[in-house]
Length: 257
Image (cartoon, rainbow, N blue to C red; front, side):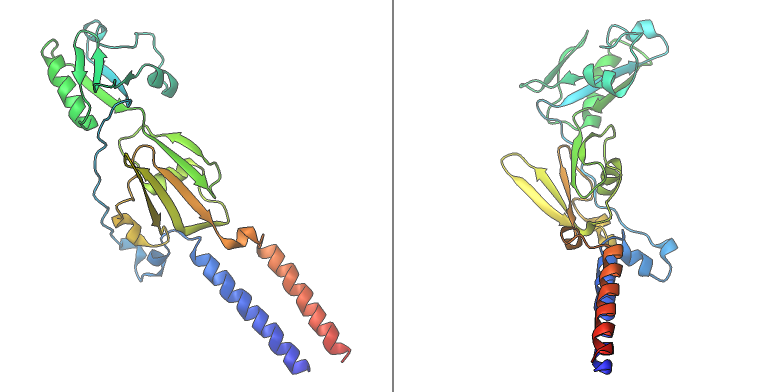
């Protein structure tokens, strides 16, 4: 009976060990890189980045910079005393109307829908050059938002002030993963007009760099799935207490046989 009891305890320990190993694989970013012989020199080809195409109702911020402020003042929507912070920039942006136009002081209405941000910036730069010399045009997309949901520390909708952002950077905006996040099953939901696309990404594998969804697009939703252990409320302390109780019970039963 004592031998049988010992065998049961060993089986329990082995089962818990395998369970923890399986869980560990799902909580380590790029787990396969750590397994490589020389992970310090591994190179990965990133997926091709496609620039965002401007569409109606997009919000863009336009600013002209030159040596002489008086020269650009009439073209800028903001004043000399404007404080440049995220909120003021957002409020002073242009909304592309239903005809794909923005109405810029002096220049009038400019058609930018269907262009990339860089393409629209160049178009406006060419128009400004007809009036001014030595002035630089800056155009930024202000309606680039991504929603981060699920098992992250700060789920929310985040404004992206860069032209591009990858899935790792987006999740870092939310404070990173929780202890129960399943990094092998991260879903991206993308609105492509009349329908939505979904893709499940494995962030534990370096093949993510070459995935078409590695680079996020405006209005993407990222959902981080929780592991089953969260639903069962299993953690190291619970496992330790459970194992200790089972071991004590089995030894108790063995002693009184």
